[in-house]
Image 1 (spheres, rainbow, N blue to C red):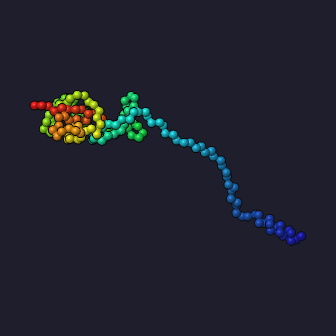
Image 2: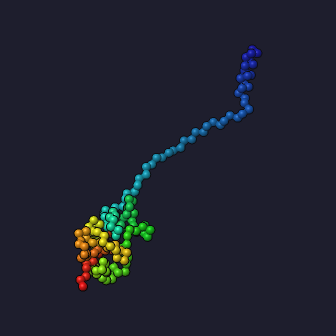
Image 3: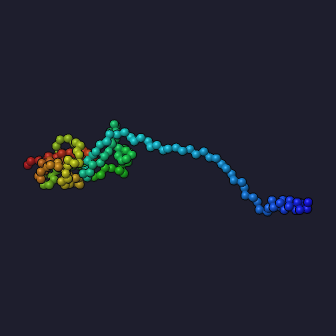
Length: 165
């Protein structure tokens, strides 16, 4: 009997420790919601290619209201101005364009003829510059140019015919 009591005392003494026991782990349940991000649809617009005054074709989209949309996200160019604009220099930025004066290019005089119209870059060749504005001619034009073509604004050009003296 002494032996059994001694074992019980040893066992009971072992359960009393001077160090505190670590706290029991806390388990929390959180709700995780998985959503997929859906990009908004791109603004509707008809694709169009415009020839810039640099001779490079740029693709844009034009809305039914006539807004010009640019870039992959089809952003209205009016929202980006003045920071973003079409590359190149255009005749509408110069005072001589609206006056209708004769311009002298390559020692010959040229006067505005007809109405402004759209042109594709592949039908034009760069032949020089007038007042910082690039000057083009028809790809098949002879060496002595009967007419020149001046970019008025992106995608729109004005023909100038040679003035006979």
